[in-house]
Picture 1 (cartoon, rainbow, N blue to C red):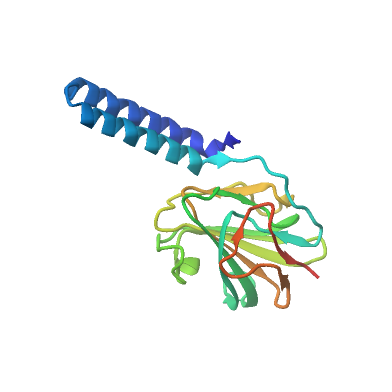
Picture 2: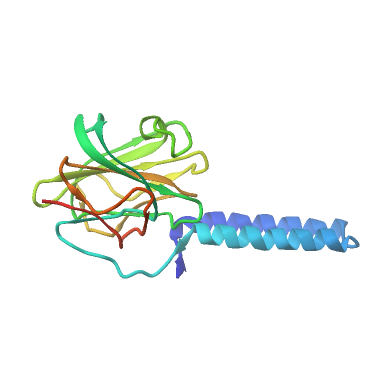
Length: 219
């Protein structure tokens, strides 16, 4: 397991904060043993927590020309027909994966193809399970066209805790299945929009792994 590049600055700042708070306690409260140990334990907990936020575990990915692979770790919270109003402007099959703070936060391309559309939207930070988060929160929208002509839309959505979305793609890019397309710091949600009638291999509340779990099959 390695640490993702998006965590380098946050981890460095966390180490600096831990060093300062421990130095202050050691200097001003050297005689209060219980307080020193409390701060030591808090510092250890904070450091481990930040490290796990940015972990990048080694994985054997699932690949398949007509497979849609889960773009993120988390739990399936939505499988439903809905109106997609930004790009398709018609009914699509939506699958949403909620990323908790303990999940790996890397986002991966669910299919290979050409990026036909990309847009970043500044916005609010509603809780990720709020239905309005899909249209009102800070988010990105990516549409990749499969080589068979099928477009798949996936959207990074910030939540109440996640305050920074990072993306690595732009319109015209040729992307590869399971390669990183972005990162959401401290978790949130990823929505995928598929053509109606697509065979979905997931169930509500199922725990999934990005780059491993098969989400759907394209016809």
